[in-house]
Image (cartoon, rainbow, N blue to C red):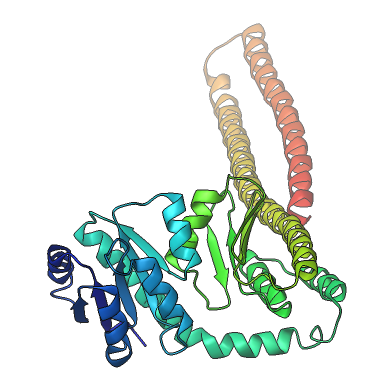
Length: 376
């Protein structure tokens, strides 16, 4: 359901007043408490969908509170946004490792908090809408893989992605493949000409995961922390949330499998990008050829009109000369001279007409070549 209830936890009343002021005109039911123990005592009865949890508090800090919330099946689903005066990678990693979904650094602005809550609201909506669809899709798409070996699942995945021709379908296939290994994953695709794409079984990656992708995408191939692992390639980052730490041998196999799967997926993503680039180039080439073809036809029409005009001019000239020369009192030599000059002009025009015919032939050959390119 959409976000309706928020619990704010901070030992400083002034900070709670700021949060209350920012959210005053929104349709949220806001409850505020002053400590971690009070939060734990309140949360089940109030049933918030989001907790704005201060990190630095006496008695019990925000990380400890979050651990207890996530350890309790009744409260594990609640989204936790940490509120802290520190925003380093280490702080965010700690927040994420205990189960936090987002992180905001004090002092934060009016628009920043509202924007993050809108995103979390969309996360709740997407999770509710896609939960059943994802389960059904997983069961259908990978039913045949359920009883296969790990390598069999990988081979099946590689065969399947060979037919995929768009990045969204490829990202969905990747997270469902990892689900067949009982792995919960988040994926980021980075292509040169579009915004990053994010994929997870819940439909939307949490804001803190997206921030981690951005912070760590250039920090090396593998990052392992707790039972999580982040794999970075040039175009793809993958975050696994539940590596099998209880079984070292399986952990090592899965880590190797995951790196190989991401590598293969990146090659397919590059193939998709190349295909899309070629299709775009072909479209531009088709447009250019059509434009040039149109200009050639226009030029040929202009030459034809010019030829017809020349013929009409010479015809009128001949008629006028034949009509007027006999009455002009010219001697024979003068008449011959005039007729000779007119004949020379006509012959020059005929010569130009032959050149025009040559141009037309050349244009026709070019038009045939353009038609051949268009048909490829």
